[in-house]
Length: 307
Ligand SMILES: [Zn+2]
Image (cartoon, rainbow, N blue to C red):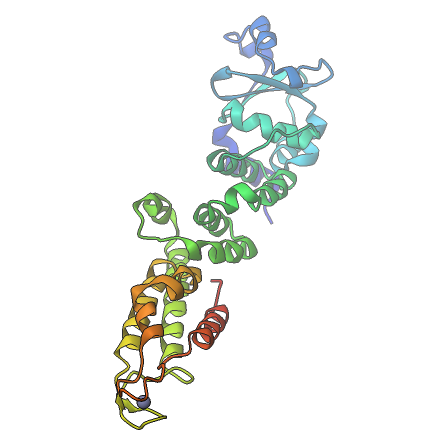
């Protein structure tokens, strides 16, 4: 457990408290002009400055002390003078501070859909030890917009140690082709264990399906004899379809496209459903399309689906 002083000093380089009489470069009028309208109440007793004095936020030290471990520790240090009217210069931009201060002040939060912005706010909430905003952002991170971007959500969840969200997101990534250049940047940012877990999940799905397709009720692919007329039968059409299925699982491990359009439309599938015993007066169909479809779907549903 860190003492408040340790916590404070651990973060000290990013924060500078200037009593008003020492901050001559910041004129009082200029602060008033640049106060954010939602944080301009004269009741507030401290002013937070966004990076470079671009925007000021007048807030209550009570709010900061009750919602931030960082500010609680800072205000517990002996004060040389009353902190009233101090300006605290922070290192963050107003676009990050504003939603964070809205959250701790119980104000309405505008929709946050930009993944980069959510991550920036989260980073600052962690820096200032604000559990309330962290939990809000965690909820936000699981909402639809990020679910539409499951690889980003996975990277996000892994970086912050959110196991459940990482599992949920890993399942959603199965519909992605990770070799598509549009994913390269996100993949490069993944910690190596997270990347390995994701690749292993995809590998396990492909290999388990491959091995299931080699066991009963599927034919082995070796030459056999027709059950009706005993003439020799070649199963090369099934071997080719299996190969195609495995290739498709590499591209899209979710497996949905194997079932549709795959087993309906692929030339390799159509060749299977047409295949018959070669003997003229037998012409038995070699494969049962309906049953093959049902068993392959069941096999895909049974594959591991999360890291
Ligand atoms: Zn036959």
